[in-house]
Structures are given as structure tokens and as C-alpha cells.
Length: 42
Image (cartoon, rainbow, N blue to C red; front, side, top):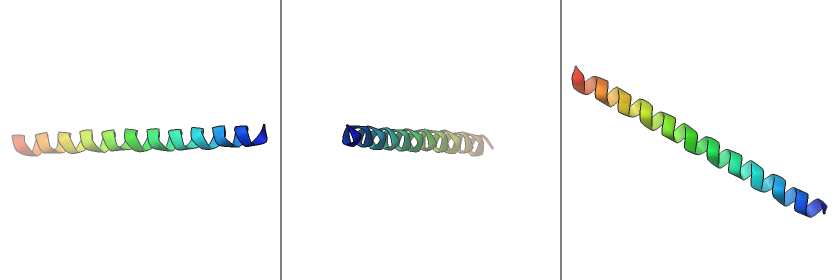
């Protein structure tokens, strides 16, 4: 029982870290694209 709970908590933390990493990557990419668009207009 304890081991099952431990595996679930590890899986959850890995999932959260991956989700946060992907969200940060998307935000950085969109900011980079916005900067690229702005610099191409000028």
C-alpha cells in the first residue's frame, strides 16, 4: 500500500514537472515569435 502511494506521488510530480516545462517552452516560443514579428515590421 505504501509503495503504491509512493509510485503515484512520484508519477504525479513527474507529470507536473513535465507540464510546467512544456508550458514554459510554449510561452518562451510565443514571446520569441512576437519579438521576431516586431523586429521584422521595423
